[in-house]
Image (spheres, rainbow, N blue to C red):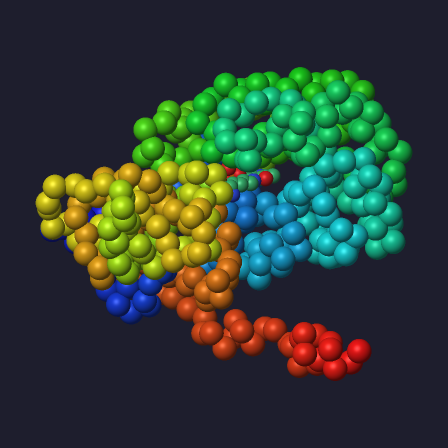
Length: 433
Ligand code: LLP
């Protein structure tokens, strides 16, 4: 199935015309395809089903519970990075035994909550974190099952803001200190070492950095086992890129990536955990938006749409390319547009000099490949209500996060307790003196 897809010049999300979604839920709105989501998961499951592999969806990519639940029902676990994500995953029905907890800054409260749930694994990113986890586990009368996240100093060859495996990045324990870290952990009664974890970055389009990371994992496994440590879980992280149709190198297929992992790690008799985010949900989502105005600038033609950087941050944050397509094909010579949102910042730009068929105020457009790191990074900047989300399956449309109303958003503030401020105008300053 292709998502989204044109039928007689009209854009469809599965069997639902996109204009009908816009009519019903208004815009901007994220729309996800349940069928495309299932297809992506099955591509992973077919490859990693051998042995006792576990596909832990990186919840940070899309944390709507409908998405997590759909994946969980097919057997997915979850990779979480906060108590909030852990709570979401549990509520969405992912068993704790299939949850791994990553992240550089777990607090004692977060550790305690995760220990109480008996999650599968903590991915520990520093020695101080290991010591604190030991203390919290002992106070709970438990042993924390851990893998150390090792920083292999490998360049993932991706955008610098989402590269995580270089020595200069804040993530993981340097591979040069790995032996020491495992030796210290072996001394701690609240820690139970079970594996090694690595995640070198996101939106990787080349295979070589993965290959280097997997080889590093394999070598470390042999070395650590030689030193008497129990290594039975290898968490290979996520990071496989998707095709954003930006003309850059195409990412490897899931099959190619999985074959590489299985070839390098398969013989080690470990549980392999993979933590995909973007490659599971990226291409299953579109952001539907309506053109508000077309404005002729001095030099440029601005296509001003009702979605803003607060709804989809990726273009402003990473200069990310997202394909933008009209929801109705009417033909006409393509026109060059600056596609911008309503936010009061020049950075609120979705595309520069983008050739699109001629559009009119009121037309609908879809911003593609917005299912990963889209809605989850949305904010209410400029006091704009949080963007809603819907899911389609065949001709069924389900609202999975309704549009919020202004009162809810503004009502979050509690200004009434603040004492009246004495405003020092020039006049009363004079009077007081
Ligand atoms: N595991 C860990 C420990 C991670 O930090 C991440 C992503 C993943 C798995 C999932 O990676 P993926 O398969 O999605 O590449 N907001 C950025 C992406 C940030 C990625 C953060 N970590 C963006 O919009 O491109």
